[in-house]
Length: 160
Image 1 (cartoon, helix red, strand yellow):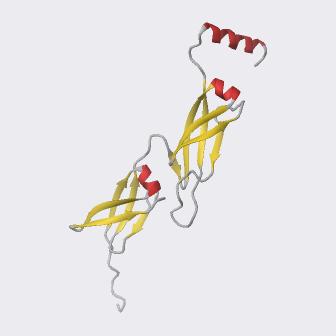
Image 2 (image 1 turned 90 degrees about the vertical axis):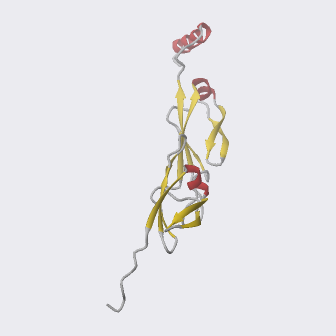
Image 3 (image 1 turned 90 degrees about the horizontal axis):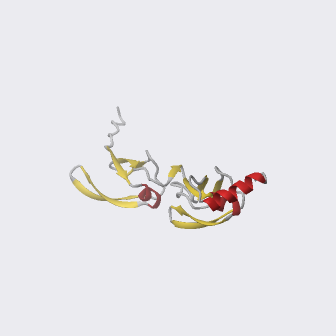
């Protein structure tokens, strides 16, 4: 045929850390016996395929022990004490670029989801950054002092 056969471009895979996928990373790889420095852009996701011209690279991402990811959005679970959920206050939560202070409203229920705009992963194509969603769980104390127990019993009598 006049068009010739399209040359198959070799395909490799590389596993990178969760945080490197968020911020981007430079890696040294060996391709067909040659060492090469390659740049992986911030925002790559599990299974992303990057075309380097003479080869394709499929990206795998190691899971993180605190963060989960869905596209450009990051999810994190945070446990707060019962007293803080009841009275409200400030807590620090992890984000992909460090700790962030957030306000917990008085009466916050377990399972409440809070959205932190622009605290997610960068979008691979196009501009902008995803959000972080913080799921609050309220920790119920397992053991109480006599005094704490008396206070809770009083609250119970008052229907709280």
